[in-house]
Amino acid sequence: MASTSQTRLAYIAESTWGTTPSTPTWITSRFTGESLNANIQNVTSEEIRSDRNVTDLIQTGSSAGGSVDFELSYGAYDDWLESLFYSTWSTNVLKNGVTQKSFTLEKTFETGTTDQFHRFAGSVVNGMSLSMATNAVVTGSFDFLSKGVTSAQAEVATSTYNAATSAAVINAASNFASLAITGATSPALTALDLNITNNLGQQSQLGSLDARGIRTGRFEVTGNLTAYFENAELYELFLAGTGADLTFKLGGASSSNYVFDVPTLKFSNGTVVAGGNDQDLLVNLDFQGLYDSGDAATLKVTRTA
Image (cartoon, rainbow, N blue to C red; front, side, top):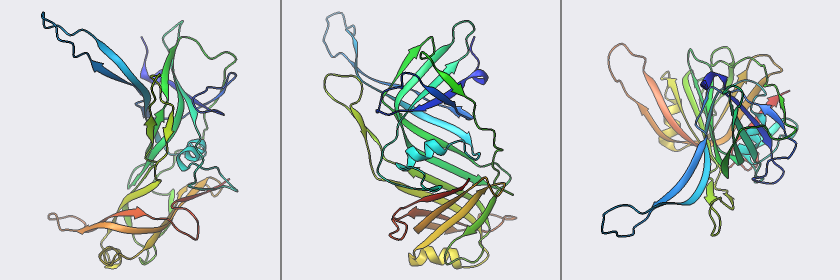
């Protein structure tokens, strides 16, 4: 009987979308949960029968994907960030671009003498969420869209598996630093959420259950922040529709951190309400990242290696 606590998740970069390398060196991934699964489209036959029974259930399409949840640690997800950004790290800087990068993901379930393997070829990161809150570690989730899933009872021939990274989990207290928002003087945040999506879509075709490819959409960055209502600065940025930016650092040691930079943003919604007695008064703001001509990007991440 398989246990979730013995599940291994690994990945390998693909040279050709949807094709697993023949001699893969898998990289074991750190994760806290996942929902990777097959998505089979079925159509129920509409044939009319005098005995009132259903004739058939027909498969008409297939795709796969799902989410991988994580606690952020340095170096653990740099490859997946490249797929999310449609770009590559250049001198330890990553900006959103236009080049798709895909992986084969593999789940291994320990079932005794014969393990079970589920492989998701043609996996591209559709989105990522990142959540920071007081008294908590930094958590998030990657959302994948895949070509399909296969089930096997053996490793891919000549497979090897590299161990997962071992860097410490990043917390949102002592590992959160260098917060800056243009137009706001040293705001004190209680929560910050960052959401990114590529708006991917499956490209179906006649003659095959599997997709022909994955359509690329717009790269969108949105988020939400909650801060103590100490002055009018943040709220008035929202009221005036004034452009701002957002920069913050995540990481412990000076050689193991990330700086996230949304160089241009506007606040789309804002509230300051007294919800009841004995509570801190907070300002809650939603924001939208916008293209910045200076950085030629909407989002930039710099790692200290």
